[in-house]
Image 1 (cartoon, one colour):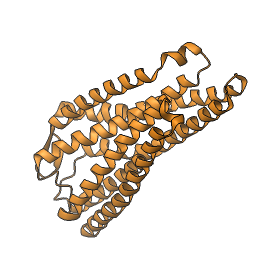
Image 2 (cartoon, rainbow, N blue to C red; image 1 turned 120 degrees about the horizontal axis):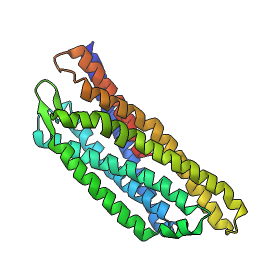
Image 3 (tube, helix red, strand yellow; image 1 turned 180 degrees about the vertical axis):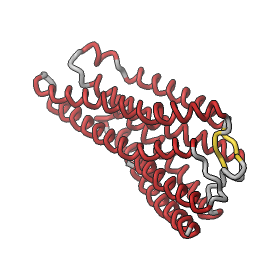
Image 4 (tube, rainbow, N blue to C red; image 1 turned 90 degrees about the vertical axis):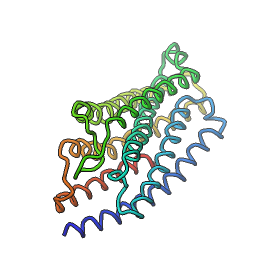
Length: 276
């Protein structure tokens, strides 16, 4: 029974991962080209954040393909055999995922300020400020991810996991549920609703029709992005918290097979989030 589940999980991970990564690479490349080449988006701060997010999603898709290649060759992702790869996978995955989530929040917040009826708020947020803020946030997440990888080790009968008890508690009760889950969802949802309210007021403001239409289109994209973000991110966050607190030994074959299948399904949904 357990071998059947593991076999299905491996094939599902390989095929679904390959399809998602392939479509995600194409989709994110199109996003990058649209937001960088079309003149109407070049000086738009919201489009800038979407471009940065698409870049990180593109890199995440490439990272996903490399993991799928390992799975197809060795049967797993090799993190349980190589300590360097165990640490690197934690670091790379955390940087790409955290920066992508942060850009979603920045996009929603910037859309609110861009459509605000107060002129001083609109003028405060400039493209130069957006670039500085993006650089600072990427630097912070890179440092955080390196520390995360430092405390990752290969545990006997468990595999690659966080070995430090204090950092495991931090990841369980703050990083995954708050920084990587509830906080970006709340921030992006809050500012998206405010931006939607601002856009509805654009009709009563003296704004060119083209600008009004552009603001509405970007706001619609942001709102849809937030809905997809919430639906596809929540399962992986729940699984990560469970996996850290309830490590399953490899010799408990049936339970390990079921948990492995749940892990693959949860992270395939997360990959869909990066693909969109």
